[in-house]
Amino acid sequence: MKLSGVELRRIRMPLVAPFRTSFGTQTVRETLLLRVESADGEGWGECVAMSDPLYSPEYVDGCADVLRRFLVPALTRRDRLDATLVAPALAPFKGHLMAKAALEMAVLDAELRERGVPFARELGAVHERVPCGVSVGIMDSVPELLDAVAGYLDAGYARIKLKIEPGWDVAPVRAVRERFGDDVLLQVDANTAYTLADARHLARLDPFDLLLIEQPLPEDDIRGHAELARQVRTPICLDESITSARSAADAIALGATSVVNVKPGRVGGYLEARRIHDVCVAHGVPVWCGGMLETGLGRAANVALAALPGFTLPGDTSASDRYYRTDITAPFTLADGHLAVPTGPGLGVEPLADALAEVTVDTEWVAA
Ligand code: SMG
Ligand code: MG
Image 1: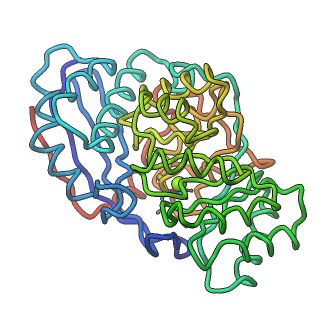
Image 2: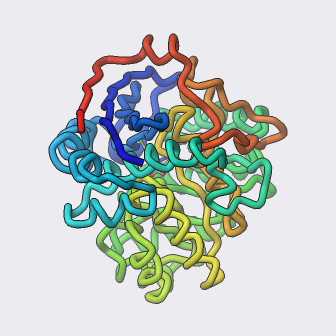
């Protein structure tokens, strides 16, 4: 295909409840959406960067800038484009993986719609539905947390992830185990809030039989994670640290991670995400699909990815109503703890014009 241009659309969606992590509290999701246009149709991409560079160095305004000035022009100047050519075309520009991922996603959606192929089939999915977990934020009190977890378990979520930070770790985990029992699939995510000096403290989580502890140490501390893995029994799972199939292979070889959180936005797109899946399968390392509070667009693609055979743990692929009162696509709803993998061409979902208009803050056309 030949792109005629790319629309950058900024939206703002209030969250149904504040979401607190070790790096801050979020009440609104500001998201950058991309719509690529060619003579044969269009495709949608969702950029997972947040408003502020707290989870990673990328942020919404920065992504819009690099897309408009460098990434979009590198694609629109090509006469023949397909999704496999996007990453190589953008490779000269360092970093900016979330911006690149959004652009590749939009091109992939456009291409697959044209070919009549669903995302899931293209990526190699083997399931028609995927079991879903939910990520539960840090709360002001343990009773408040227990109420939230009870609500999610009642809704059917197959796994609970608790956000933790120093001062909110052993006690909430113990309380959840005591109230809901040992059968609940339970894991924690620290978003880099600890250091290796906390190893003995983190070992106090060992008795609770957690599935994993996600990203306890800073993202560049691979050796620290390997050392920590020798000092705690809970499996270590890297999130922020894994930015490519190569970094996944390295972290596995060094013993820094025995489970991997795959987030397409963090690694430059769904094609690299699939390569990470393949590397992990080859090493016998289980993977699961992470989440970045996506709208129905990103959720559709994530659910397709989570249906690949190596995704053996429930993902942060919760239903639309865990985040938003109104999604911009038909909502993803939980059935028996699962979300259905879309079957239509491309993403298999589209923004609903009214819902999209309602949350749009700004649109900008970047012409070829
Ligand atoms: O999409 O359900 C979701 C959010 C899952 O906890 C989640 N994401 O580190 O895994 C993670 C965080 C990153 C975003 S926190 C604002
Ligand atoms: Mg995480």
